[in-house]
Amino acid sequence: LIPLVVIVGAGAVGAVFYITRLATRNPDVSWNKKGNPEPWQEYKDKQYKFWSSKDLSTVPKPERPEF
Image (cartoon, rainbow, N blue to C red; front, side, top):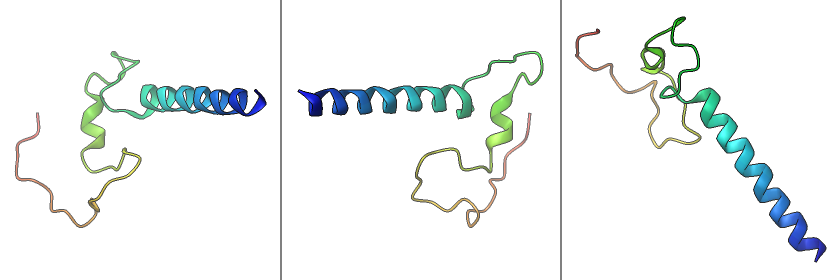
């Protein structure tokens, strides 16, 4: 019974960590609309995923207009 409690507890801690990380680090979530109405513009060239198969420092910047 103790291993079951430990495994379920570890899963709950992992779920809380993941949801907290999504709420604080994801550019799609904005807690302060007045301070920065378009926060996703800051993350164009930043790595914000846990893991990515691309190295963003070697990818050329796209030719597109900024709004």
